[in-house]
Length: 99
Image (tube, rainbow, N blue to C red):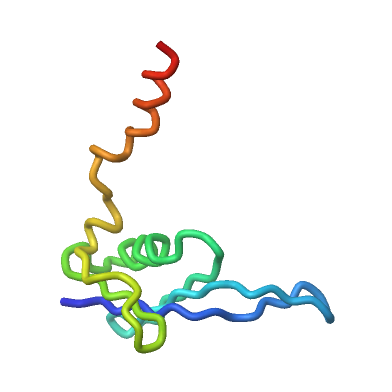
């Protein structure tokens, strides 16, 4: 199963005269529409929301902006659970510098 996530940008109005451009990630799964708007980690946050609603944890993710592929096909697990060998690398470097 392949879950396709579409990226685009929208305008969010601050007041009558000012707006800012925000990034949006959206997908449809099992009859539901999921959307996340932010300037941060869009894909991971959207996949976490889909997984909380009993979405797939196995399968592939395809991320598109229009017709352009943004990320190569990757397993959903790699987005939700990154490898631990890289997770503590910054902490390890910090501890080595202190010694």
